[in-house]
Image 1 (cartoon, rainbow, N blue to C red):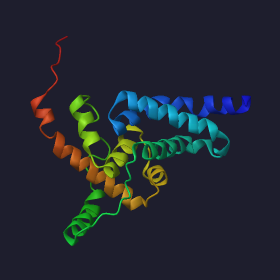
Image 2: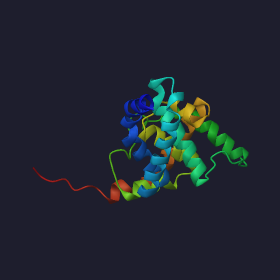
Image 3: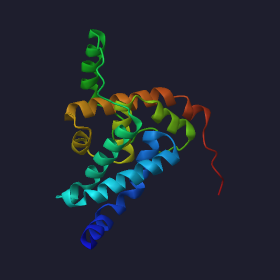
Image 4: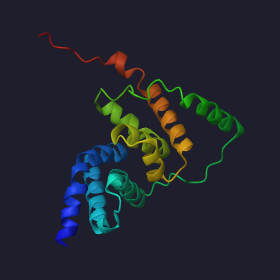
Amino acid sequence: MEDRRKKFDVHVLPYLDILYRAAVRLVGQKADAEDLVQESCLRAFAGIDRLRNVESCKAWLFTIMRSTYLRRWGEDPYRARVVGVENLEATLRDMREVLHDTYESDPPYLHVVGLEIQSAIYALPITFREAVVLADVARLSYREMARVLEIPLGTVMSRLYRGRRMLRATLSDYGSVRRPKLKAL
């Protein structure tokens, strides 16, 4: 028990802040995010002996949090959807654009904090919200995201690109309407 506690303290506790920030973006409410992180940490503690590669601890924790989220809130990102040919063509066109995403290194909403942004993230369909939160809040790599979401790397790239594009469209007026006032020195 002592060894399990020590392993948990060393490898899991350093990620609590980032888990919480991601949980807030995922569920939209601070109280729900606290519950999600707490339940995820309980599951992580119970399964800490299964963590073989400590370098992948962050991705392992986000996998636990994601499955906890899906179980508790009942959102299933894999529900069968009917996809029309026009949507398929748009997706294939988007995949070519993914490699040229000008916001890859600096998403436009990372430097601004506000309820509008949190609402915009929460309003994204779950498949895109997960990708945006894992990439821009948790800062997971594409490969880590693919493992957490259990989807191919190309699908991760597509969802992230499309999610960011949806956010840019939703928040396009935010920057022009609410510019922060700078204090003079």
